[in-house]
Image 1 (cartoon, rainbow, N blue to C red):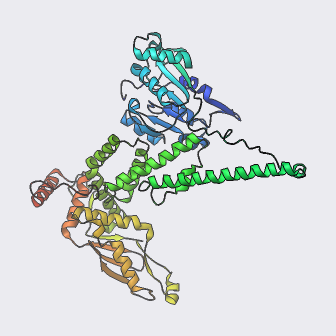
Image 2: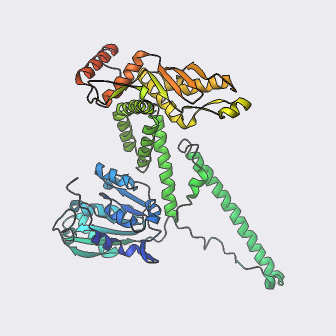
Image 3: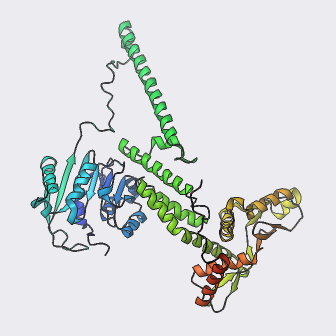
Length: 521
């Protein structure tokens, strides 16, 4: 079961951990709304599930203030599926800019002291509830344990929970302790105190004070001073906003509203607003890196969506040189599988629409498989702006069905990849149809059909909305089918070997490495 340090926290222990941080609302107990939670060894999320499971109506509100780390990749995947913000894998190496005020911890028993000291160092202020092997407290034979004992004496308490994991999901007879620490600071970087900024008296102008000329002048004079302070502060705000905008050039996309980003309206406290700001910017930075890697160039719509989800998860990770390099390595190691998936998705797109699109192939791995016919029928990919009766009277226009805009680009992207054609130079199906429809203009009685050519297809469109695509290049058609069916493991071994040998012969002894994912100049 995962690694040897994985001991999921029993529910009764979690209840004990979080008890001081719950507040009563109506009939239920809920986590205090100003808490920003760190779970450094989150496992599969048992502690976080307990917190967010109290009330499903406020689960999303909790999620945006929860951050966690986990070293096991499979467990990271589980945490992300649950919606938790995974900000790293190695807590002891973590140096992110997030602000936390509550750490809930069940670290590896063997290095619990090191993890707890790291959390104490990381929290500027707030509370820690941590499960430790009780021997870590009882037997302080290392320098770290002595330091932990001193911190406990000054800032915390130890509660002996005994063999609390004896009947747990993963059992052990080890006696454990619940350590509570509280850290306070005289002045937080997020607390802004204006009490002593000015000595002006905030008198109230009313009917009584208005009769006193001296009092009135004093009050109005102070109001003028306060107004000047407000104007000066607003200038500082404008300068700061301009500075943020300047330094974020290239990081925030055209659809990212800087004002909304600065406000973070859905956050309650300054600490939460700061974390939300950092999360959004980091996500945009990672997306910018992916764009520079040219990674979306040959992605189909669905692959792109999956990759955007990956990028969003990646956006929670620290923006460091090491992590950027890890992402680059991931992209390059997986570029062929990304492209292969794109081919298979377009194959599925062609075969799902019409029986005439596919040809039954006897003798392939299973006898219900097929290949794409050279002519493909795509119903509904073209539309008319008016029904037949109105068309006769007013005329109508052919239009590309925008509902299939992603599918149009997916088809051409895959053909560009297979043929080695730069997508930006491609005369796409969409462009070819759009240009022809503009040329035709209004249609009354006809033409009932139209024929054009795109980069890779002979295209025939019909008033009823059907589009026929016919591969112009027989080799491209064959390569598309072989590549898709090989990816789906449909080809018999002999056929697959013959196809690969032929490809190798045509491309030389070794295939040239794909340049589709090299960074843009």
